[in-house]
Amino acid sequence: MNRILEFCLVRILPLLPLRNGNKCKVSFYGIIGDCPALKLILEFIGHTGYYSCFYCYIHDVHVGGRGGKRQYYHENNIKLRHEQRYELESIRAIESSNNIYGHLGRSLLHDLLDIPLPHSIIVDYLHVSLLRHTRCILQQIYAKLSPAKRIILDQRLRSQKFPHFFNRKIRAVSDFSFIKATELKNLLLYALIPHMLYFLPKEQLAHLASYIIHGKKCFDDNTSSMSKELFLKYYQDHSVHYDDLQNLVLHLRLHFNQLFDNHGSLCYLGTFGQEDLIGAIGKSHHGTRFHGQLIAYHYEIDFALRNKTPLNRASSIENIDGPLDEVNETSDMLQDVTQHHRMICNCNKPEQLTSLSVYGEHD
Ligand SMILES: [Zn+2]
Image (cartoon, rainbow, N blue to C red; front, side, top):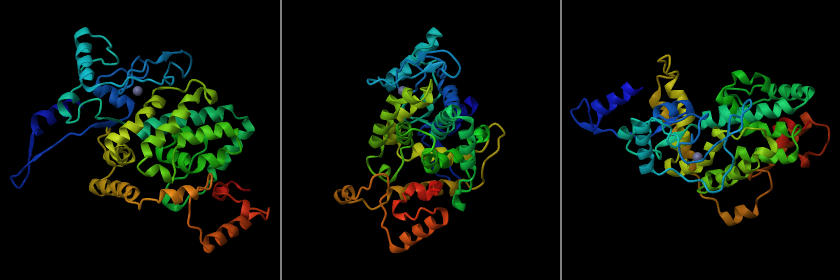
């Protein structure tokens, strides 16, 4: 990787010659990746060492035991890293050959990136949130269920139907060793809460819902502040519902609002988009030949999310209906719901049907 970066520094910067004779200035915006990759390129200590957060000086606590080597408990006054001190500390790490607040050396990215470190570091939602923390908490919930309930939960997850354009179904928790991030995303965003209604107490269910942090209102201008507020609540109460899972990946999520404010859509376009684009680096295998189309595809999603007509806040607050999304109900929709209810239930109370029960849980 260093040889690639050296090539970039020597051969490309500052001007890239084009075929038509013009020269193009290339700017390197930032670095995105999962924690092991970032640790290497940034010459930083890993999650098993002290001061391993790229953005702040949180001091993790060694607790020992299986799965609980280091814990990052919630703190109110976290001190963020400053760009100048970030580089100075990395130089001190080289001079002293010691871990200086997480630095083990000076990263080549200091000379390459146009945005100074640590502001140009973007942690990968796909790995940090989905493949790590989501999987860990679900496996712990699963382990605490009785064997009979585990079988029921697995059966329900396996039989969950999705529209065909989701491409992937969701897996049972017992098959999590082979789960893909896309499957975890579908489970987390669409199916987890309805399925967990029967297995978790309502306090834990509400706590889990605050982690999921999704919904219509999350896409307006208050996305980052709303998400942080919900996440802080989740973080503070984490030890009430889970054992020794306050690890680095949970803590990094605390900085997601800052990433969203600084980088906008780049902080999530880089996740599923980059998986599509890069394929397996180790095998020099590219995921696709259609790089341009994929970039356009993910930007179109972002554009669609941000280009919505602003809601009339006064009227939308009046119409809030608890856990249900706001929809413009039509008589056709109500007929569909009633008909669907008759197919799956004999209770003859379609008016009590909620959006969650429509999703396959009202039986
Ligand atoms: Zn931090």
